[in-house]
Amino acid sequence: MSIENDLRIIKTRKLIRDAFVKLIDIKGFDAITINNIADMAMINRSTFYLHYTDKYDLLQKTMEEAIQNILQLVAPEAHIIDNQLEYDSFVQNISSILKTVENDALLYKIILNDKEMSGISKKFENALIEKLDICFPDHILISRDLFLQLITSLYMSAIRWWLNNDMKYSTNFIAEQLVKLLVAGPCKTVRI
Image (spheres, rainbow, N blue to C red):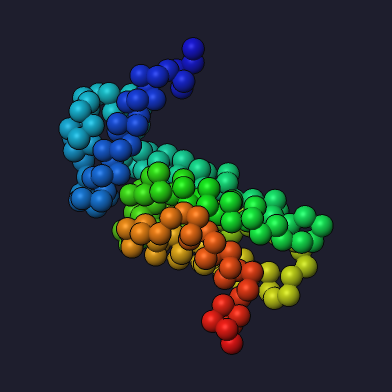
């Protein structure tokens, strides 16, 4: 069995990661010490250092994992078959992305809201733009750069709003609302 797949290692990293995320929420990243993380995770400092070089390494790995968890689900090309939008599969895909966010809500809330970590939010935004750029057709009606920025901003703003409002709507409801807006556009959505 490889070290990466050893259940004890997986559990220890989860304890460290969960403690880290809670501490960012409570104290902010800059105020966190390795002792804080070790205490909350109920591990020794030496155990922490077996897995991460410092809190910056932990931050980078945690954020990269969170971003990848979302990006692997983003698949707009799956919703377009013979130049026709498959509405239900689009809703289903957005809903699966939101379920991933819901399962790690505090982390994504921190990524999307924390001013102290705005570089992480920008990295997430840029990664999403790159992913969408690959997925959408080359010929669109407006500037491609503007289109990608607008779609990315819509996704990120909707998720931020949902998280900041305690996820009071189901993932499927939010997904349907987003798809309706994307399909109909703002003017038709407000019946103009």
